[in-house]
Length: 120
Figure 1 (cartoon, rainbow, N blue to C red):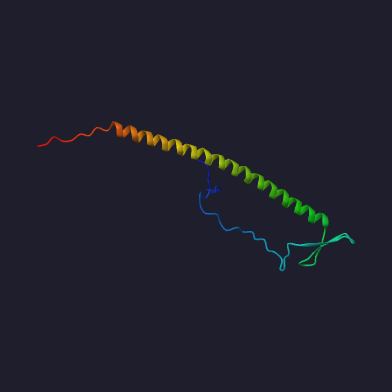
Figure 2 (tube, helix red, strand yellow):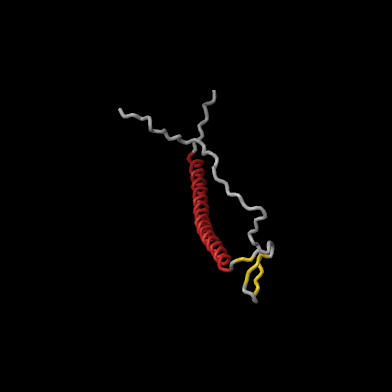
């Protein structure tokens, strides 16, 4: 047999430990919800905090946000279409099964023979 002193057993299905990382935001963090464009100086400024913004960086981040939103919308729309088709199939199956139950009940009622005990 080999020496297993360097082997650590896998902990298995235990709960995950708390995340050791935390992202701390700066105080007075502004996500620049509204901007002001100055046509004369061709600059951008946040109307909330007054910070001068780089137009390219602002456009790039908003383009990435828009692209992610568009992809998410496409995924959700496809899922919704698939789920609606599944619901339609299940409704057809429900109608079919209810009809089958009705047919079997009628058949059962017509096939029932009532047996009465002999009178004493």
